[in-house]
Amino acid sequence: MIRTPEALIPYILAVAAVLGGTAWHLGDRTGGLGRTVVIGEARIGGPFALTDQDGKVYTDKNLRGHWTLLYFGYTHCPDVCPLTLQLMGDVMDRLGAKAARVTPLFITVDPARDTPGVMKQYVAVFGKQFVGLTGSEAQIAPVLKEFRVYAKKRPVAGGDYAMDHSGSIYLLDPTGKFAGTYEEVDGPEKIAADLKDRL
Ligand code: NI
Image (spheres, rainbow, N blue to C red):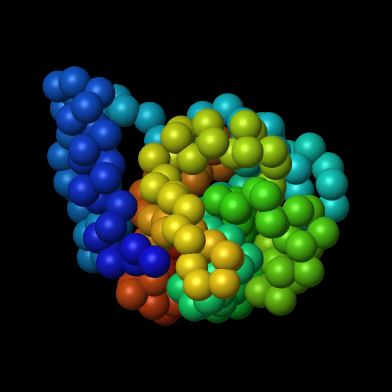
């Protein structure tokens, strides 16, 4: 599993470079967390249509009207995904009444195994507000691309496989636009404080 705290940043920068001369800079808009990545006009995110844990269609339009803490991972992940989702749950707990204005969202990078039913059981563990999204491989792949998520299948012993994937938590504003990233190492207290300031 690739999960160094800064794992996403070089990838984003590489993508920005590939996009060809796109202006980018690393900015500190997070009041001390210092890991918000601003990439000129390069967009993170975009339109999508996936399926939630209840089998209902969930699109980018569902991102409007509330802040979103978005994490990409998979339910078979042995360690980092559950820890990060637990952290997101801790952040939600610390927001108190303001938690109503935030949706914790988990999108699978392993749609073959993460059916809506599997997602439903899984996200319920981390909190009532959690939404888990899956879809076909053809639906998930462009979403990963839009959000610059690295995810790659890796065979493991016994004919099974794991997914190497980037591990940042994305913050989306109430228009659904990318507003920055948090990392697990930031811890729930700092993330909740930063989020409260924005809400
Ligand atoms: Ni994981």
